[in-house]
Image (tube, rainbow, N blue to C red):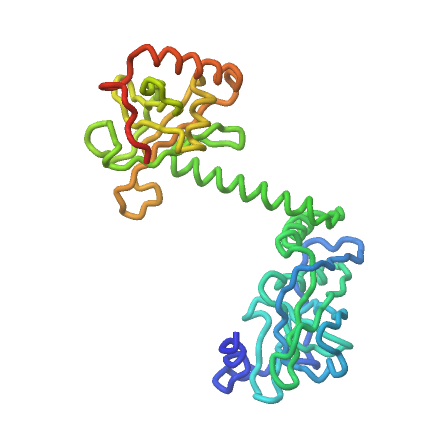
Length: 333
């Protein structure tokens, strides 16, 4: 950060380009497709975002730990440092200027750089700020105090698309962030796995090694398959949970042990449901020879109680014989 501010105000930064500077700025309004009825919004919270301060004299008398309010500038400006003669353009930096008692003193850090759009759209807000220390002689270290910046960004993403007022409810907004992130994650998985995955999908992912691969030659190309499952017998007297063999037709591919806790539970609880399988090679397209087995069970067929009962029945039947070779499960991976 020291290097950043040295660069920011150092003599090697380009000087102003003839446009307005600091306190005598030439307004350059930000276009807003909708201008709702002016509303005062409260975004106070405990999430700290750094403010880049270049003019410290306006904060004379404010002590470390003090909290106060600043104004968000609704247009772009050039912030000029009188001490170095350098200029920062809020357009070039993609940030928002802030002022205190009518004097522009700095700009907002990443996470709040769009607030000029909020104010330009007709919303009134005052930004709560805390002095957390001194950056250097005469220059205070300041932080904006807001709700979670992810929630605030989500609010503006929603609000900018409508003239209706969107309530600022941090919990609800964060839930919306999580829902969108999960939807994006599922889309990514669907694209890479080649199988549609939804939030209701029952999915298990396994990571076989060459040593534990049972399907012949090590796969070099991704392929779909229709998995079936066989519960393998345990040694007599063993208290261990039985391994589950994943088959493609008559060919065994991989044994799953209870040590693969999440995948084992998903398979054992849904073993009678229709299932789609994918042998995925080089999942991240990084040129590796890694392989994943992706199993997606249909969630709309059957129920957990029925599948669990079937698993227990299969486990009991397996104790009487069957399985691969001598019936001894392979070592888990």
